[in-house]
Length: 235
Image 1 (tube, rainbow, N blue to C red):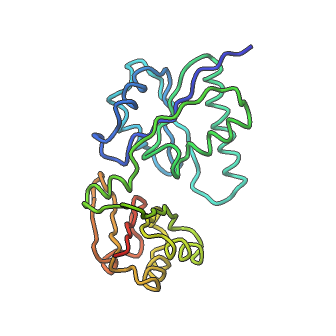
Image 2: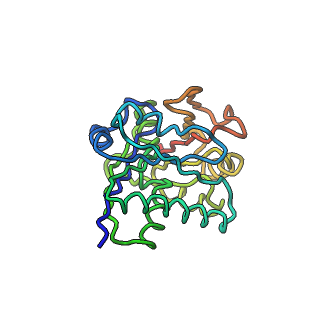
């Protein structure tokens, strides 16, 4: 019977190398293999650059390429191939870490990998090391309270359909709009209709080169950086 090594999903934080957790650092110093996810369009993995100072000197680094496409067949094939790569190494009894920006279970590639692996080999042991999210870092950087008392916080995808986006933002006392890089005209329209434009703060590339905070959405470019989000709170 094969004895699999443990797969650790490790969140390295939103980008600032100082925001990686102690638990993540300690775990990285124990694993045999490190999986670094990257777009097929990019040569480097930002998550790997954050984690690199904390790796064992003999740790093996394996790049996993993920295509940037909406073609489900292409995506499924890539996930299966990457899951096979991970499973093969874990089957050798080696422990491994899958690196992800932010938190492994919040809009992360790790979630897709986990589902695919479970479909292949449910007996693989998995542990998750949570990471600081981009919206937590953005709130801290801007000094904005996310929620308090009996308020509720909604975490919304900026690429959600317009009606869904409006329904969620209309019901929540406070919200975080992640993935705000692709759909700014729609997001602006929804916030305007709900009277929330003046309550929104746009944060982009926090912890990275080109970091910026916009108090007015009118100043935000139509096509902002991929690393962008909006904080919204009524009142």
